Every structure is written in structure tokens, then in C-alpha cells.
Amino acid sequence: MRFSMAAILILLSLSACADDRREERLRAAGPNPSLDALLKVADADIGARKFGACAGCHKASKDAPDFGGPNLYGVFGQVMGQHSARFGYTQAMVDEGDHGGRWDAPTLDAWIANPRRVVPGTNMQFAGMGDALDRADIIAYLRRQSD
Image 1 (tube, rainbow, N blue to C red):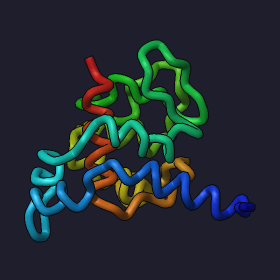
Image 2 (cartoon, rainbow, N blue to C red):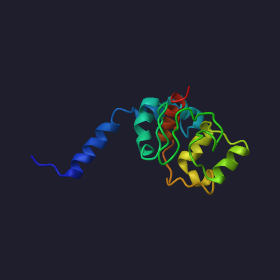
Image 3 (tube, rainbow, N blue to C red):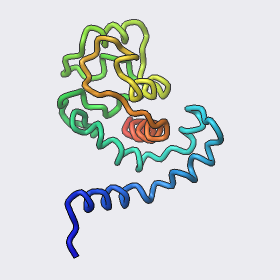
């Protein structure tokens, strides 16, 4: 039996997502769940896999170097635009931190959904992630990747 490369990729992507208990977790979060409700059902291990969408530019490991973007290890709760002394943040990001912006759950959620809406002038080349549970899983992962 011969499979095309597209069929193999589809099967691999379906098997990678099959164990995330998505429907069960969404039911537990309730109808029209808030960010707090989604964070209660978020899974950091699933978030680690979903962080793959970010891994082209970001690492989230202790002592990892900055890449296309800053290393995000320990970013949870930190001041925006000041987490990495080595990374060259845009002035817009530095200004956001200077005005009290912190990487808390609501800010991370908004950022992952649409970075340019949170900080106009950012250089981050990411259109955003629309799925709220995916964002909550990534936030749970980033929270775990903090001391």
C-alpha cells in the first residue's frame, strides 16, 4: 500500500493531537469559558507540544540562548521588554514594560492571539493563534518554565 506524503503528514498530525482530551477539557471549562476557566483545564505538557509553533524563534529552556526572539524561560510575571539582557527589543516593547506591562496570563493570552494588537510596533513576525485552549496550554507551559 502506498501513501502520499500529504496523507502521512495528515495521519501524523491527527495522532499527535488525539491524546489532548480537547473536548473533555472544553466541557470542563464550561460554555463560553473565560481565560481563568481555560487555565484550570490547561495542560502544560500539551502546551509544550503547541509551543512548537513558537520554537522557530523562541526557546524556553533554562540557559538557552536567545534566537530570533528572546529565550522565554522564566518570562512569566516579568516586565515586558526587559526579560533578556541580551535581546534587542523594539522601543515599542521597552516602552510597554516601562509603562507597567508584565507577562501575566491575560497579557500572554492577548499576545499569543495577536502580538501587534498588544504592542503596535513590535517586530514579532507571528500572525497570532486563534484557539483559546491552545493559548491556555502554551501559557501553562510558560508558567511551568519559570522558577
